[in-house]
Length: 246
Image 1 (cartoon, rainbow, N blue to C red):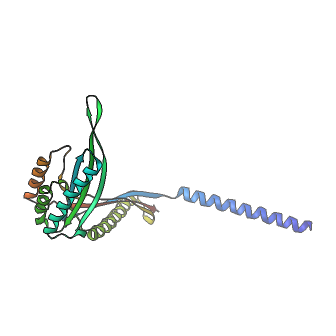
Image 2: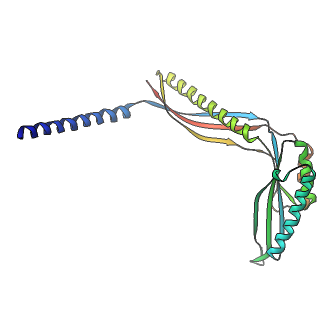
Image 3: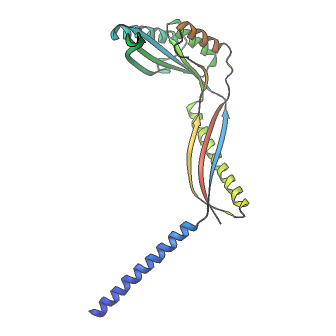
């Protein structure tokens, strides 16, 4: 009985010792392992394929109900004019709709101006020649133009995003190889890679200024659409990669 207990005790001590050695080797190997951390970048240029016109219908009245009803009337006029241009209801998207109390600062205190209703619509088309007609349809109906943006088709955007990430990853590897060579080392295997950033910004043809009058807004928006010459859009990506070196 005593002999068996002694053997078991010895076995336990041996296992614990081996685990300790294993842990020591693992920790030191991990600690001493040489790695290179690099950042890869890539940019891809593409021609815009779509134009989006953001239309803002804004009404203020002494009562919320009157403000809402007036806004509804103008919005319906805008949509009717867009239908005349060939747009379907499915092509006209409601971006946001809000009714709120509108205040101004007068005589050193807040004054209630009334209830403001804002209905923002978006119309998207691949026919750039329609841009001016969309603007005319909106402003002639009593609406404002919030933004006019040139954009990418969603399917192509996803394709370019993947291509940009691929190129950024290749850029990271190229940098890692250069660092390893400069340090008189050889590049080892990839340890980790993370996509830090992906960026795509539509090109703005027009953006509404703060507190501009309806007449100024209409003139500026119409002027912007007279000669459309959309610039190329940029899709960029950034990745962080870690390689071992030997």
